[in-house]
Image (cartoon, rainbow, N blue to C red; front, side, top):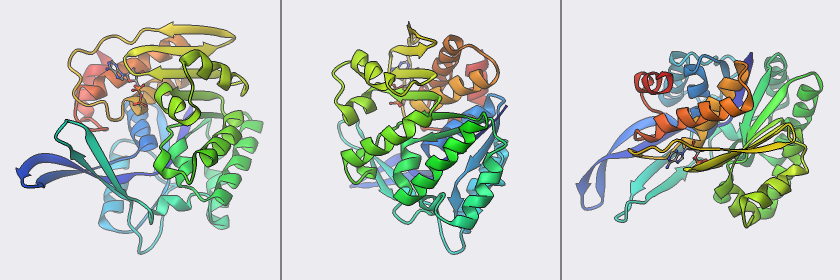
Length: 311
Ligand code: ADP
């Protein structure tokens, strides 16, 4: 089973140590929601390809090297001359909250599916895949016309037996308006087989009063699998006409929940691609997320991941 994840990888700057008076030493790494999921799926033994656009600067080259080092296939990635990837920096405020600032307006990943020649190449790379994975962030950064092309491709991909997994990952600041986000997700959910949603995001986009309302609302898309993540609360799974609540094992030593949902998705999808039933895939998702939230950052060292997820 092969899966391709589509989206954006950014340069990340995270505070390493505070130097006082508004200055800090920053640790530089790379992250992005679908990229994080791709990394953890690859570490879980799945054949993963990543699809994005990068530049030809040293950061883009290092991103490619990192991906290859993780065993992620990069041949579908296009490099645009003279461009460089998006960047974000994290600041810790006095009350312990993390504040994210982004410089991604010029990110080459925004041109995904925009150019007709590149699109034709991508289609031939993606059609042989068994699964595609994308998120609301992938869609938010794309031009509206490119989204239409992607949607038409998903229809064709599913028509020939491919399956689509989608995390709505609603980030209000990436959208022109809440209505634009709603309209886009409403168009893409009917082309989704596995929806991996987070209740908090659903609530902020749709105003759902409770998880029941959220499940009812999404019922209209006839999703084969609907997974609703709720932080430390049980994961709700709607599959084969049945609703189940699967407990999240408590994690005593939570350090940083960044990337928890991305890691969960990786554990879930890897298990499904390897033949597990949805309920045990949820448990695999929980295990994967638990390992990641015990460490700082969205991508934890491979050795720690293997040790904690395999044990
Ligand atoms: P997101 O990162 O998308 O906001 P959630 O916060 O819902 O997603 O978390 C995704 C998954 O991460 C949960 O379903 C659970 O498996 C795990 N998780 C998140 N927070 C905790 C926690 N405090 N304790 C244990 N597991 C957690």
